Length: 453
Ligand code: GDG
Image (cartoon, rainbow, N blue to C red):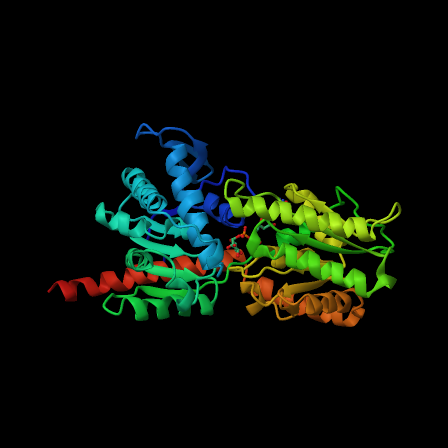
């Protein structure tokens, strides 16, 4: 029985924003059907006069969007969230760039967002906060008197304690996170890493409820999109070119240079494949104000040029590299045309591309997923060929195996993964999380009279 009123989503961005990120698409359909509010930054960089909440409705969903000043956004988003938390949570301490100024900016934006949300709240709202931009949001809310039940979901991995301890101010952040009522993680490993860190660093603090909630996709909807007449026919229908596809935000966690090097090795070791296969890499630019992303762009264009210069000729290009975001209706049929989906992040919370690729396949003649062991999705997609993205030889071997896999094995692997996609879809993810958050609320309300007495 539903006891709560609205679901209130709090995330860095409001859904109107058009970017390649994974969160908005799956949740939106469900939120439109029930009374709900989505609160976040609207993507505008301008001075906030303190009263800038823009409200608009989409069916039963209300979106409340605020602008941020360029300075505040730079310190909060580019500085601490993406200059410290993103690299460190992905085990890239070498790319971490900490400054006290950025950290203060991060806290200030969290405090500001809590203050802007407060007047919009109703007593029986259930608040669901998303991702590493908002670790201290619950603490800020509680200090401003917001008492509604509040859960958090981390979309990215949580680092093991030996890495996490290198993050400046981590103890303070843990204290703030513990102000949530429920902390959700993509995998059991992430959840354990968090709990272990709390035990080690903050033995005196009460750790809230935690759970693993692997995010999913809508497999039937994706399958339907992928079946549509292709906007672009990449490869001849007779399969005379065997297509390999990769789609990632242009991010150093996605293992793109490692992938290009492994593909170059495959080209070097197997000249018999020349002329008959092609890797298409779609890589929409991301966070272009953070220096590590600019460096990555240069490295990749260099590697792509080397591969094309060395192996390409007038009749055949071994690699197509597109640094642009494609429209979804273009993308899904491309997945279906490929023989191989190559998804090889160095570390990834879940990786929705892996799931989308599987959902898009033709059940009668499916392609093969080559997947990094270090993506959260590897815990679920046991029909994939799992690889270590740091080992170019192993990756080249897996690509070869995928390109030449017999039909019966492809179908068997696909069926196992399709079953997982259906059993663990995006709707199940949302319902399970909110049910747990709500059940928590009910338990504590039942307990309240006894403890009060
Ligand atoms: C974070 C976590 C976790 C990509 N290029 C295009 C495009 N995309 C879409 C994909 C997919 C989404 O963007 C990317 O999602 P991922 O899960 O792969 O990765 P992150 O953006 O890093 O997301 C991740 C996720 O949150 C959800 O919890 O899985 O681990 O890092 O949906 O299809 N979409 C379009 N054109 C593109 O060129 N239309």
